[in-house]
Picture (cartoon, one colour):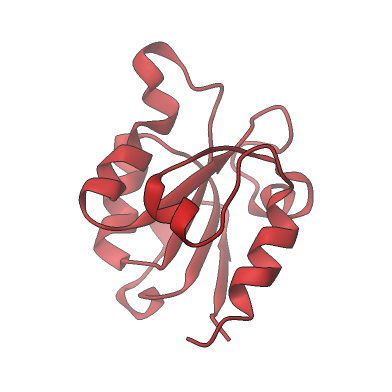
Length: 123
């Protein structure tokens, strides 16, 4: 099984978290994505934070895609920003990069069931 790491802030990830599913309450901007890049999880989950000007709230998804890493974001209307438990319990995926889609992540669907399915894969 793939380990699930639930963190309110993506800054809590460590090198030992490489290959995990990193589920955070952080926005999906570039600054958050840089922390995910350093840890290299299999999948990073963020909050879209309302997307924002020039897609700033999800800019990290493309950044991580450019580095070959899967990332998605849940809608800020479905989960509280900064609270990973809310992301897991109530989050609905609003955006996903191609690498996340290749793992089976689909927009418009509840995150929890998708994470449960993904985590059952062999590590």
